[in-house]
View: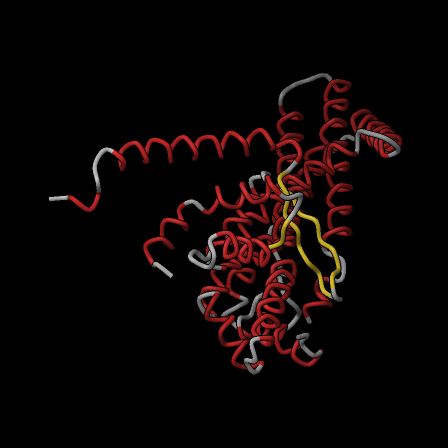
Length: 230
Length: 116
């Protein structure tokens, strides 16, 4: 016996409003399981509400479902890192290789120009360190909101933060910091201008290509997520 | 259903998942629960609270891959053993099989009911 559309929405609301789950993939999987379990109970002549209660009990209750979402996140984040790595590798194959070559060439030209024609390198690093400090507000705010959004209602006023966003924010920031620090260390290490410019080109090319991977990742895994949860 | 048997099953859940998936191309969560129930004639039941964390962990480790399809207007997530992890799955199952054989050797030495 099939459930009605209203009952379908009731199940979804149970996950999003009662359990306050946020991970779309997890919600979809649980909804599918609930529907199968409830439909099977409906054929045994249980009323919908009773079937729903029994299915919730099978899962161990609301708290157990919330705990399952945390466990889901652990595996999911590991998977997301693997996906990102695969995207990064894909930048060096097929048609994307051409784009990678163009980006790297442009960055190399820029690094050579800055290396040979810019005098105030120290000023550039002051600007960069300011940028890093300013940008750190994003990862610093992301994590507590991600962890507390289930318990503090007003934190969800602008939407929800999902695992994909946490992965994207932290990977972006980590890459940026690593690149900036490597570049700074390189400038201080006494290489010739040419060597320093070329090594800087390698560092910033890797960062740029990684950013392209992150944009692709975001397009693929974060599209409409905020909308669909709201 | 026997609660002790349930606990034993909980400890071997990865083996159950890998075994079932090695026999079928792909399965989804509810299907795995039902299949266990069917094989054991309802004697054993994988709880959802144990099944999904195990599935997600195996997926996170890269042993399982997933594929989402729309069935009856809703998304259904199918699990299968990753093509490059078939050997790993076989090794894990062999390890569990070996453990069960050893356990059987211990349990068979005497009749358990005649414990003094």
